[in-house]
Image (tube, rainbow, N blue to C red; front, side):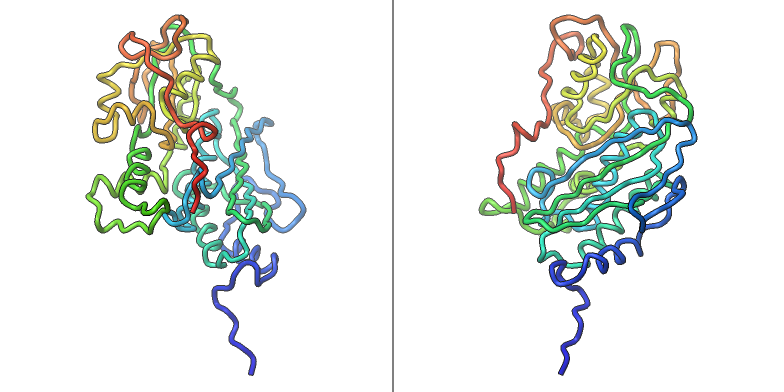
Length: 336
């Protein structure tokens, strides 16, 4: 007697076409796509004749743990971190290309959940943007590589290199919530050197929010183009920690970033200044505006641009370390 088909088969037991059809069934059309998935390449309109492109890879181990994040979480996060890079250039995200390297034992439901996460993140953070293509292969470790495209809508790109002395430094987004969430995951859901399943029911409201922000960041994507229209002179995604990323902007612009401790404390999650400065993965937008420009809604003044000296980042005029997340330095290699 023939066996019943597995309703949730392993990736290694089904064809690539079956997996792709399951993914594409959950992928809406992108507003800027002239030709979407199904051919050798997608065709995306570029009304301004300038295309912003960025790519990022998430790897099981240094970037996420499957015990802590569902397929939906991973799809959301992979989309959000790439959308934020596009927004940081002052562009509007238009399309995502996704390449997955998946262990053979992975269940199809985990991949379709990932597709749902991609769709939900695009719908919530960058309406009109969607997955338009990609690639699928097998691997011993789960890897998610995303390329994001964006349109500048006729504006020049806002880079890290445009900050000028006297400009106002501002932030849209959060500081320290994702780092707090990661600290909770390692502290509460980690045993014998391995991650354990997350039970949000044992967490308080602030802890649940922090864990949620670690697993599903909410960068202010729409404010990237708003900042560009308002005259932002420099901007970047805060992915590796405010101090470290501000140091990168300082180096690129040849200036010094001087943060206000009072302003920083007002934005820090649970008032933790250390996490606000050194914690990564919140994916806020650090932007610089001329002093005579009214800050756009959603941006909060955080400091000023000072003349260049031997230090890149200051707090109330005093130098602070450019601390933050560096996967080559900070990852110990431990995986699930």
